[in-house]
Image (cartoon, rainbow, N blue to C red; front, top):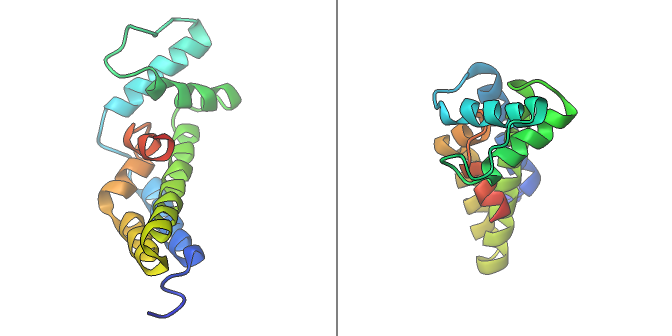
Length: 137
């Protein structure tokens, strides 16, 4: 296998290009994310508590709330944060595969996550819970 194929930098670059294209060209179809952002924004701006009152675990609202503290843009700021989290998922899967089965397996796993349409969707749709679950669990 050529060395560029197993290069983490190349895998992350391709993953970043795909996520950037999806971020700009795809608005999203799943409505759970905007609801999470709206609830997090209501907590930050209006002081409306949500702990113990939502269908999803509270951790789903903390990341959008954290980014809304720095920039009050409920659309782009949250989507950019989740795209960055999606890139870290590619990196973490590469590291896990490399540590367990070697560099070739890590590169294969990294390419799979980098190119997987569901991973790209979860990275670029607004406030999807799956991306942070992979990163933080």
